[in-house]
Length: 223
Image 1 (tube, rainbow, N blue to C red):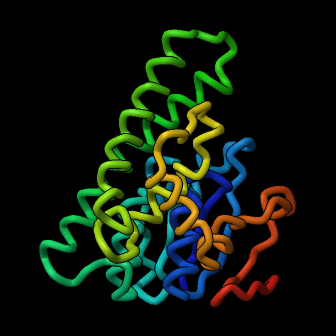
Image 2 (image 1 turned 45 degrees about the vertical axis):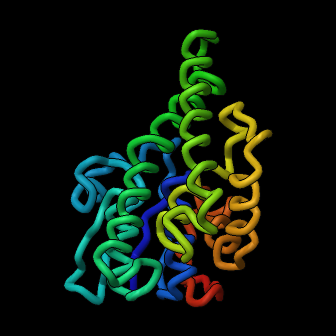
């Protein structure tokens, strides 16, 4: 059993989607970011950085893993899926995963801040981050012209990581008009049942009522 500490954010959705895709049973522990629960002393014991998501693998000596990219690699290797077994294939997936972690995520995050949340609208900052997001989207467009999925011909954790963020491009004020391969890929990945299930975790009510939820193969049981 995996304990998943998460909230309704792109980084959180990466892990719930991966768990659904891998059909690994897991228990959801919703973390309220508005209540700063990620900074609680008990949570910092498993994630010193005080961010979500975090998992604890109860089947591996209560082993905690934090940072969404590290969690994706850990889960793929644990299940033996969503990561190629050959060295070159594995490297390609990790390269594109790092592209998301170092580029897409931070740049879209900054675009979100200045476009949606900043008390003062600063045109220079908004334009800077939206332009960089579009540049990165263009890199993906080129990659997807020759490949069905982000890291090649097979669906992988690299697709999960990118989709969790790029599917919310409108929230960053960024269009994907003129990027047909990126649009194709977004629809392809978004149509997967496990992606749809994982994107709905945690449920909207979970953050408020702190229900603990166990999920296995898409089946939800309140415990």
